Length: 402
Image (cartoon, rainbow, N blue to C red; front, side, top):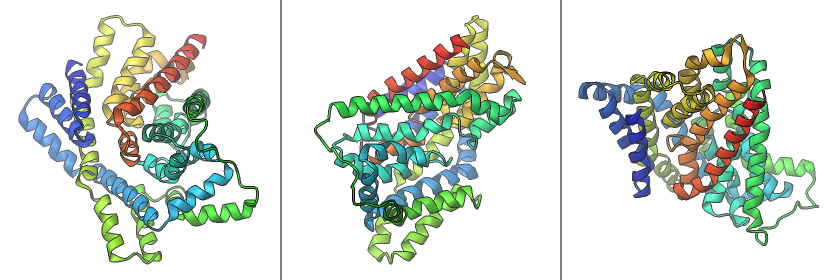
């Protein structure tokens, strides 16, 4: 427990000193490993396994391809055309709906995809980099609380022996709640900037023309969605496929291809998923969730605090929703139930886990979204933290009411 907290503090201190987040996470993982594992050989073995893990390189391919795709679309003017098209439905509406739309597809680095759709709109609206990063990041994840194709939702049903329908029914109010929280935060942000970027729908744009322009400027993104949802291809195939097709069909020059590859293969970007997966591997190998659960149980901590603390810590330590479900939720079966569950307990546990995921710098969507908008991560937290606190508070109220 102390080792985990110390490693998290190290990460934030290093971020404060403007070290790149990939390096900060890797050093934090090393601190955690040194304090939690038995020997240096265990550390090197775990690092070696992480480096060879196919899931690590799957993430590298997806993230690098997503970055490359956004650069390629920008070079060919597709992002500008997409922003102009989205303005027809209202700039603010597009700013909220585009990330939520991308959120329907479970994929790593999804926030980068939605960020490429709304970046120019956010700029025209006069938003700061941190405001844009927050709104994109927040609305990208509202659907993850209840969309039945997310691994976390599926795994929740399996662990507590309930149907996916029951999981969705229990957790869907939090999708609505978090959408409302995002809208309130957006209102407060725009209230301070009411004189900037006021745009309305263009009356001369027919629906058919709007759809045609939208698809023409965003086809690489929707190709990815189609390949994942309908052809059931893995995201590590869908992303590079879309990127290659865009380059081939758009007659990219050699210089353009070099620019795309230079950004996509940026060593810091490539190293980020490796560092994150190493941190996650240390957390799992050291069995920290069981240690924390035992500490909470031995000290007779109230059930609602156990429901909040354990998923939050695991979510924060891993930055992945299905990780906190798979690691923490089996330990919560005596509290939540099996077959017949306490809906309020499940909601509180899931929201707390997502709170950890949304707040941690181990979450790739957060880091990449901040990086894409050139925002400062600590300033971005000034928007994320109150939104997450509001979400937890409402879930706690619902838990008491159930």
